[in-house]
Image 1 (cartoon, one colour):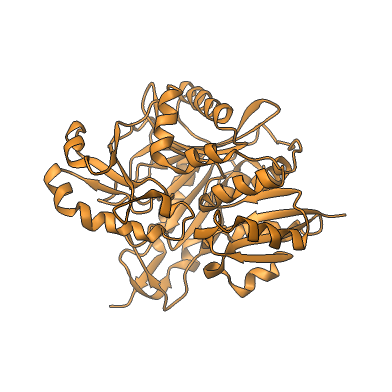
Image 2 (tube, helix red, strand yellow; image 1 turned 90 degrees about the vertical axis):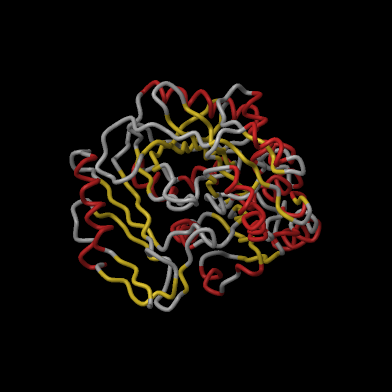
Length: 431
C-alpha cells in the first residue's frame, strides 16, 4: 500500500523540477498538495493525487479544518515542505499527526529573523549587529554604522531587502519602504508581526564579504549557502554553494549558485560546526543556511528550516547525484536516507533577467546561448506578453541556466561558458 505524503507548496516557477520529481514518485507514494487557493493552477492536478486549497495566511487559525480535509483523504505518513512560507504549517501538522518535524516555538525562530539572530547569538555563531525597527528605532539606529540594510522579520529570497547609505536617506525613505511589507500579507505569520499596521522590520549593519579565490564572474563572490540534513544524531552537508554578494543596487538580487564551494577548508569546517549547532538546538532535520565569507570566519546571514529555494534542488542533484526530495521524504517518514558521497561535479546555475521591468516583447539568443560547452539545462519562467518586475516589486528572476563540467572539473572553463551564454540570451522589453 502506498504511503501518504503531504506536500506543502507555494507558487514559484523555479519549482518545476520539484513538481516533476513528485510526479515521478507517484508509483511509490500518494501525494496531496496543500497550497494557497490563489496559487492553484489546473495543471498542478496532473502532477499529484490530491489537492487541498487553503487560505495560507489563515493556515494556523484554520488548522482544525485543514486537518479534517487531510483526514478525509487519509492519515499522512510524512510531510514534504517545499516553501519557507509553510514552515509554521509543517510544524503544526507534524505535531498533530505525530510525524517528524520541529516544535512550534522552534519553527517561529526559523521564520523570524529577529528571533533567529538572538538564537544564533546565544549559540555563539557570528551575526551582524542588528536592531528591531520599532517605536524607538530612530534613536537606536544611531548605534549602527552605515550603510545598513532593512529587511522584514519574515520572508525569504531577499524579498524587499534594501540598502541605505546614510541616516538622512533612511529617515527620508523609511516609511515608503516599510509600506512594502504588505507584500507578505499571504504569510501565516503576517498579522503577528505588525507594528502600527506595518510589517516589523529588522535593521542591521552591512558586513560585506571577502573574495577568497579567483573567478571570471563579474561580481564579488563572498557568500555561501549550506544545504544540510540531520539524522542518527549526525549532521550531513549535502552541498555548499558559492554565491555572489547581492549588493548590485539598493536592493538585493541573487544571481548565481556554484558548487562545490571553493572556499578554504577551514571555512568548510566552520560551516559544518555552525550548522551542526543549529540542527541540534533547533530540532530541524533540514536546513538551508547562508553565511558571508571572510578569510578566517563566517558570519551568519540567515537560515531556513527547509531545502534551499530557487534552483538549489536541481543543482544539488546535478552536482552530487543526491536527490534532495527523495532524502526529505525518507526523513519525513522517519527512515534513514541513502546518501551518495564523494561525488561533486562543478555545477553553476545562473539567473536570467530582463534588464528593466515591463512587458516581455521577446527572448533573443536562446538557440545560440545553449550551444556552449557544459550546457546542461535551462528554464524560462515567463511568457511573451507577461509583465516582468524588478526589485522592490519582485526579486524573482525570469529564468535560469545550468552548466556542469563533469569532463575535467575545470571551473574556469565552466565560468567561461556561463558568461558567454548569459551575454547572449536577452529578455527584450516593449518600449
